Image 1 (tube, helix red, strand yellow):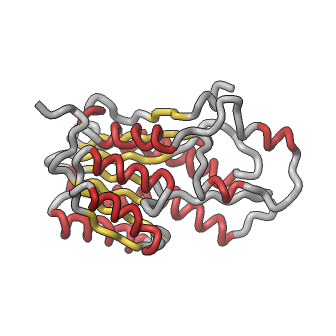
Image 2: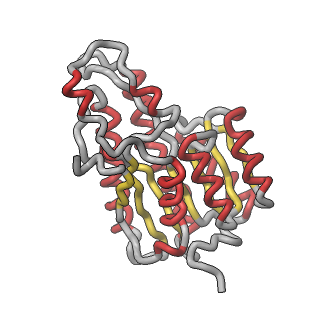
Length: 253
């Protein structure tokens, strides 16, 4: 008898899969038996993830697309369905982090963070829903402890993650009478390329910076990827509109 986390015969699309949490999530889903479409703005970054997935005997589709373009969000879903004939799980992992004083934050950075962190999950989900509405499917959004906790000099990032959390919950309600399940993971700090964008280029109050950490240390990326895969799989069948925090105690500290 297959386990509830068996995803054999299913297809998952993972954004931000060129490395970090996105890459780890794509590999974990493949380990569970899913064929995977991997999306990243960098075609070169996708190659290592795709090679790992193929090495497991799973099919993989590389999608070097730009999530700031709404048309390319729809293209990602269309190409996934054209290649595999279905999409069973959409994992919105891609994210952008920019640090800055609110009075100095550029309009270009505002647009980038909003488009990748908030708009892309919505437009990807909107395009995926028609393919899931009858047979079922899951959407997993990557929120953050920033969804709950104010972090000075990261106001725009925090705003997008808080909005994405509520988008997760409201869409889960909207589709609660269908076989579509929508949930989220809220990781704490992880040692990823995204975290490397968090270093300010200006002097800031150390007490404010101190709010970003906790004695528990940083999260292990594979632990968060395990939760992404769990929510994408049938094992989480009773979960709708949930947000699971994986943060080594950052929220309670």
